[in-house]
Length: 561
Image (cartoon, rainbow, N blue to C red; front, side):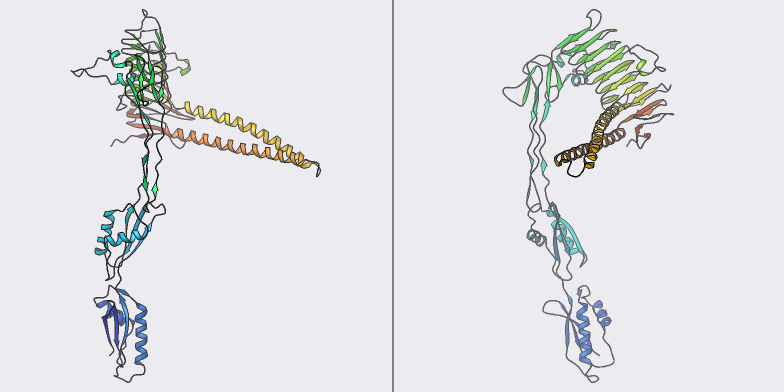
């Protein structure tokens, strides 16, 4: 019988050695495969082609032999030890490089240094991940032979853009100081002792420019530098009563004793008019700076200030108007009146509070308020509110106050602990101010579109008339000018139509962004208006968010985690 053996060769690979003997036994491919599978070399890479060549040659040698005669030895390499192979792949953006290793088949494994050298040869120069190199080298030894392993071995560094210059306030402005009064040694505060807390001295630093930064450079794994975008610079605004320090151009200092008021990119100093109370003995107050009232603003009185108004006590059925913020430590008290059956336009409140900035009060009832942001600490009742941002009823940390009845017109959101009342008092909250602005823009765009449409129609008629003239009668320059003008207005129409679509999309996006948030409950009778859509609550809900989505007003529970 022909002898078949597996023998190591000089290359440390495995040869199939056949010693042909002519008899009735047959050696075929399956016999050789079985021999290999039972051997210690079964894990090596198989060369099936050489097995077939060896068998073909065996048959050729056996054919002329006499029975039981021996032929020449046949030797073919059929199993090969394979060293681990590696391929380095660099991402298109050159911010990451990976090594793909095919583990060894009885051959040499790769060390971390081998992987590093391969990566460097492929052009990777920076950002090597030491842990990745070591981990991949260890896996190439411990994982099964002949499998593909992949590991990130280098990472580029994304540049860090510079930070923009900013204005850092070195003093607190009126409302910030009042809402965070200094404590006495015994832990109490005197909310009426406001003068020393508020005023700044001549020469006192007010604000500082924190310069922009250049940012931090990055790099690709190939070592190409990545430049950051430097931050934008800023210019400090020296408001009234302030100057840029002659000693430091980044510092704003005061030239007056007065009340600091935050303005865009700076501070202004308002002269301060301070009173104990505003009543019939003082008369109405009109002042170009800021006004501090230690006590109350009594019924029927008016206080108008260009700066901030600060009231240590109550405002009772009075008129306040400020070019800055209005802060009322006590409450706003208007006269009670029946408003349930009246439209908003028919209601005149006895207390009117208007501020260009923000308004804060401990509580408020029966008042007409206009401002940017309104925060009522405890309770907001039966009032007409118009804000350019949001209404917040509750503490600074959490909207946990009560919003009861009234008409609220907000731009962004309304927050309270409870909205509405058990009695079902009508509480109407509307987010239509910005929608009306968008719709006015659409009206203006449609007017422009109408003008452009008329012009294109006229030019189209003129073009047709010119084309109808006998050949050679229409001057070439005239035709060119009319066609060019027609094309211009046609393009203009297209631009206007795109602008209209953008505004309409902005309306839809805005409508989905506004909402009412009640952190405790919403009672029945609360009405939400958003554009042409509205919904009135028909029952009591727990913590909820009321909002518009997909042509419908929704009320979803707030899940506290």
